[in-house]
Length: 364
Image 1 (cartoon, rainbow, N blue to C red):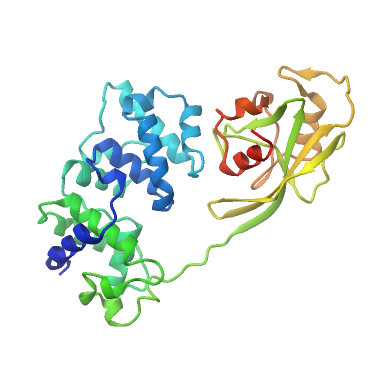
Image 2: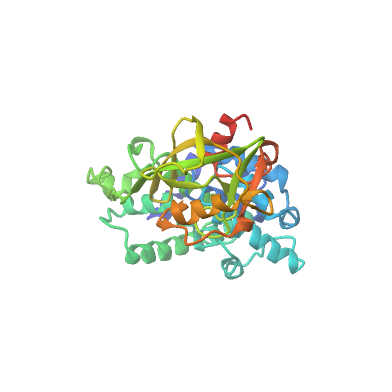
């Protein structure tokens, strides 16, 4: 029945939908980048990042030749940094094979890091005009209300994947069809306060007919873990001690050492100032950061390691106070992941957005 609504849905899309920069002359590369950026990120936040990214990395080749540090710096602020690492990894893989474009086959796209079923379908349909239906979060919500499904289980997922795949084979413009459904879900069939009165397909929507659009889909409460931490900003002359994460949350980024807010500040250091507390949200975790600028109380000849990091400081952070990360204390410290960095150098380092705001407060 959804197929019969295609003329009115197409008309709505061409007249009322939003125009986005990735919709202009779409290529496999531009659709890929936009779809990955749009995962877990609001559209309005993605637009400036997409435009900047395409200026910086206009092709797979330019992206492949960039360093991971450069790529992570360009992604800074979008969060979920594994997305950026997968994009970079895929570009380097394709470039090593002498491929300057993404493959056009669905199965070959699925084999690439970070490209799942709906991203592969979006690339195939929007960039290459192939009949692969997209079932992203917006389309799922639309289908769930259309069928008045109480829950969205594997059964409904399979049911609607089959239905949409069947419908799109009879559509001469599969990319347009997918874009129309995705934008209808995003702009009209929204999570809350859906605009059913202007929806071009609401006449056959079961949830609308039953007056249950507010109930479907059910709102699932997520268990959120929250804690407070000191963000330790060690200063020595014009440099700051930074930690490079080479594993776990924040891998590939520079940040300040952190300890639980319940712990006392490290001995041997005095607090010069405390900055405004900031919230750091990632996945289902919420961390309240209390930045404090620290300075050595007195010079001590206790020996140094390579880049001027004091032996006692490492022992203090790793053992006595426990360098703090979500899930527990650091089991140890790899000295090479710590570095005294000037504020000028930090401008080119990849840093989580919340730490960038701290740096800006310091004049960096």
